[in-house]
Every structure is written in structure tokens, then in C-alpha cells.
Length: 179
Image 1 (cartoon, rainbow, N blue to C red):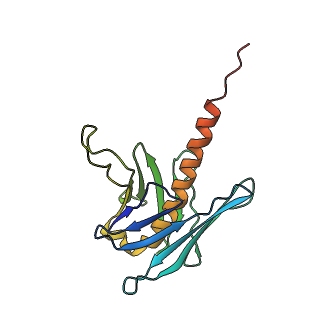
Image 2: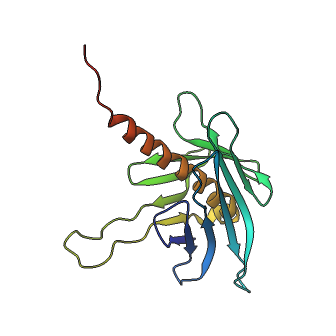
Image 3: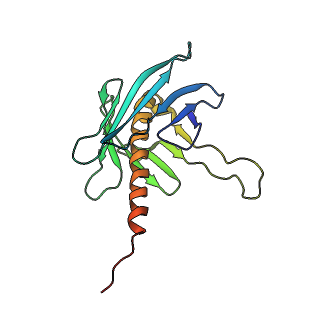
């Protein structure tokens, strides 16, 4: 299953099939106080009406964040002390881990099989007049039954990754005092 992002933004985008049919809508109102809440809606395939599917609440400080898909908690947590990524347990009882690569995010199972890949927008050719290819989330056929949980946990993972990048960039802009 290939889901095309309307824009390269894990906070506000529509995810559609290559045919143009919308499948998910992600929306996050701008809030700078206490927490931000992202709502994920899933479009019913026959009626094209959106239904609330998931909610992500990211808290600053010491409050626990929330990632729920169809009312079930799937909050990804650190994969371990010496491991990179964020792991969650899906409705099938299996554990999956989101990992960051230079131009992609990967979802893997316990055997390190890739079940989903998020590719960011990139230029087809720097001399080409065409627009860049849109960001997309590709879910392997074996994982399509978990698509809702994959989308929900991906949105959280990507929001956290981008937040960490912004913080790192902000910290690196401060001059280092030398003695």
C-alpha cells in the first residue's frame, strides 16, 4: 500500500492512494502552550466520509505523551539503551520498531524485516523542470492489516524526530565559550 502525502509534514497532511483517493487526514492546530494534539481521521472507502481514528498528544516536560489508534494505546517507546528507534506493540501482539535512516524512516519487526518505509520529498533531477516527488509511506503487503497503527505511530515518530532535529539545530547555533 502506497500512501502519498499532500505535503511533507507529519502534522498536517492528507495521505492518499496513487489513484488520488484520500485514506487518512492528519491535522494539528498550532499550539505553543503545554501540549499539541494531532487528530488522524480515516476516510471510509465507500462513502469517503472521515472518521476519527487516532489521536496523538505530545506533552512537554514530565507528562506522558499519548498515541491512540481506535482507542488502543500504541505509544512508541525507546527501543532500548543501546538501540536506536522507537518500539510499539501492535494489536496482533507483535513488537515493531521505527528507525531513522538519512532520507527515510523504516518500520521493522523483531527479525529486522522492513514492513514500512517513509520516503521524504526529493528532487527527481536537479536539472529537471518537474516538481519533486511527494513524500510517501509504503506499507508492505504483509503489514497492510496494521496500516492504521503504522500511520499513527509513524506520525508520532516523525513529529518527535523533527522536534529533536530542531532542538539540535537550535543548540548548535549557540556559541561555545572557550576559556
